[in-house]
Image (cartoon, rainbow, N blue to C red; front, side, top):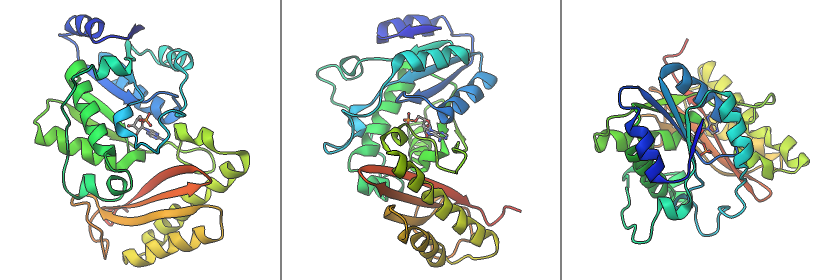
Length: 282
Ligand code: AMP
């Protein structure tokens, strides 16, 4: 497995892969089974697999956790080597954003401006900018993203379509711990007590999904059920939303596929999660 720290090294190697299909998994490292599910799918579908590890300062707000975001490159490399990854691109911040870097990719509209976009100003601008730059460097045929970050999937799909980038976006289901908590590098911030309490988030989402499957179509009732399930727990809800999968507008009645999304705080840790509400599903 190659480890590239510079764009120059990556470019030379990439030019040698010209005849091969390239699958790409962008990450911020501190890998878990959610990341590895993306890597395995990429491995199964492509001749060459590239993983990037880059904690992207552009997508963190000034009061956010950029400095304390967990990092362990040696462990990540060990895990990726075991998955048969061909190359890891782990650039420094100055390699990704050399002095003079002045371009941003901005997706507009509800997909990028509501919920996470509103709660984290500049977040999706940072995501769209780094993803576009990484796509330019890696030039993958396919790129793999997790539904865990559903709004991010929609933002990336939008920018790929709007900029006519020649890459297929492949979104994969959220990988969860045994108690339902969505795997996240940020789960390491949780104390043992907070970790137990955090399982209320998926419990609330899955209670609402059950209600939906039993025929409830009123978004207000589903949002209220999430709220109520969390009131007796240490989880502090920041938002709960039922958003149309296509338009990303808030929905009143779920008549087309929609996402039930939450952001919540446990102590000083902010977690997001979501489930798909699909009225067409059996
Ligand atoms: P991150 O390192 O948090 O930027 O995540 C890198 C990629 O892994 C993104 O596409 C995430 O959506 C995806 N991912 C993170 N956690 C999970 C999970 N629990 N299940 C599936 N994909 C995930």
